[in-house]
Length: 178
Image 1 (cartoon, rainbow, N blue to C red):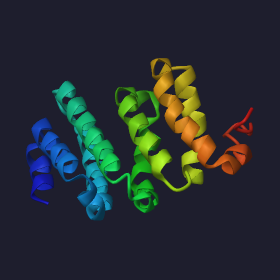
Image 2: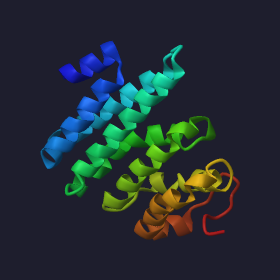
Image 3: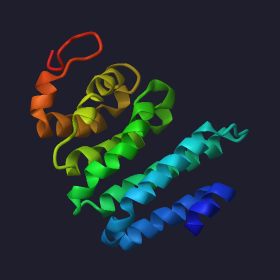
Image 4: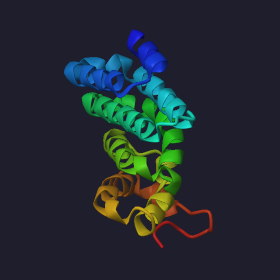
């Protein structure tokens, strides 16, 4: 609690790095706190990105640190697959923003988080499957350099929830397999 308060007050990368180190150090023991910590990190990420900061580079670096801390948490609790569906409600709204071209500086971190979420969730949800069209657009247009990293969540989604993939239809009415 104090660390999050400090992060909101001071807002520097070192505070986020400290949280990331604590998560990495305590690993599996973080499972009972995962949903709350990830939720707080998501709120903090939105606050940092929305802030009108004259030091844009510092803002981007702090936001990236927050996403790294989130990924570290997902890695730390990977043995607790039952927690991942509970994390989805917090992470999916972020992914809605992060898989857009205007958030391209965060795309690599978003793919890492999606990789954990899609691999360790017992079954990727239909909401995760609905991210596929935007991931494909990113890979074909503005995020070509991340093609290899894109394969991880795309493969996990298709392989983990094949029925939803085969039944999926994009906004233009085309089926996902086409």
